Length: 353
Image (cartoon, rainbow, N blue to C red; front, side, top):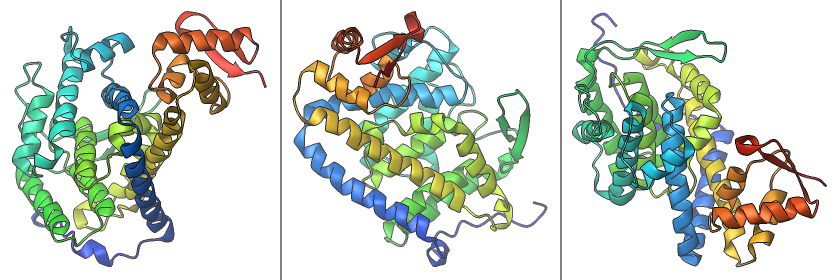
């Protein structure tokens, strides 16, 4: 860095980039899905409420799991539904995530994108525990590293120095607010680029990944993309965690000089958003018409290839109770339509034809 002065965030310049057809195609496809979703939302509000509840639980679970913060499924559900209090550090962090997500769901249109608001959200993330760093930018240099399945870790990127972080956050927010306020830049470009820059600054000693995912949700809602409310984006990211790190690593190269290529990260995020809209459509198709539980579960099973769990079916059938799903699965196994293997938690089903 030595004496080069701080990296500028000039979001107006981004407009002049030559975007490739794949990226432009993704943006067009997302707008098309967004229009379809608006029509769906008018049709079946009560079923959609159930989708919101499931998505909240999955988002909280997945975003924490990416960071290695875990508890049991039952505890997650109870924590998210606020039917219990946290028992340990992991659960305190999970409860904090739930609180921030709830605030975003209820008040997204009343949360300005400024350093102070971001710090406040970070503070709420840790409101169930005593963390002196909560709501403050980092005091020591941090590193972005990836841990691979074989256990080795590798530094992917050295983020901004602590003393430069507060000013960089201010500049980042100003740059974003300017182009969004003036309709200067397509939000589906501005949002991923903001999140990418946020991750390069890595403003906190802890909680950067979770804050980046919460801010992604917040910025998408503010720009009218509500899919994350019904289908968990965090769960999608967790499923493809290695792709997420890969896109990030490629896009961070040259960041200090302003020569980075954010396109891989933009495509990754837009691909995730588009996939979530497609999921929404699949799930909505199942709740759209009133039919017996057995038929709904049978249709859901026909959506699946290979082995699947009861939980997979629950995601596809948000309007059914667990007991109706269990009953339907039992009938489908008895009639020979489905095969069942394993016991207890490891039970899997697959179609016999």
